[in-house]
Image (cartoon, rainbow, N blue to C red; front, side):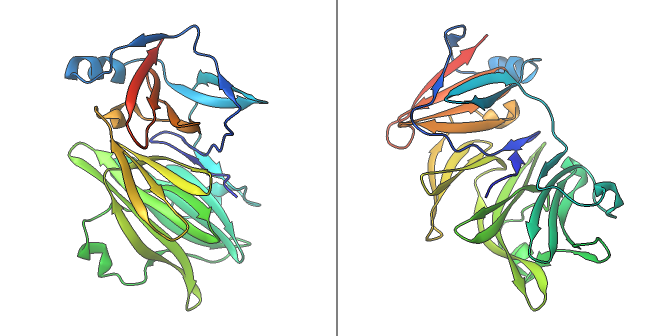
Length: 265
């Protein structure tokens, strides 16, 4: 159901089971990068990590950037006009939804037909909602399916901007359109499904979204991990693991009484 990838650089889905193991024996625990100096050093690190699954083992590997994520197209993506940047593709019954993110230069969501002979940019059902709530940049950070519905995450973290939003994508009156769901506390970096819940990691928060449409904030980070570009995440027992630039962050008992461990090499 979830083929798409997510992060500020790569956005990835992972749904792991409790029995899987991760080896951190060659890593060391360091203090959290809560000071401006330590956070800046981590931000400038050449090491950027990601999780990769091999059988029942989760490996930590160097992150690689993927410009085209999600489903495959039967035609060259470069043949689609007026899109650029990192792209996220979702197949629908009558064609393809393609989100794109060009950072500070903008982004959007476009529908193209099965044979790429027709297309249009997806807009809100009620365009007034674009400004009715806190403004969310049009940059698409992910398209995902959950509980039989299609959703998009939008947002931008750049300089003083740090916005995000959750939208449902619906087919109405012969066209695909956005339906506003909620603003987010920060720009989304990671989304994944676990135990029939959607978990969203933004630049400073972790949220969960359930089948009834409830969106709740679980925690706020003690530091601005958005500047370390989280790559992907998984849950094991009561703990969540996040891969990012410089290190691996483990949040023990993250939904009730979180404690933090920062592993680096």
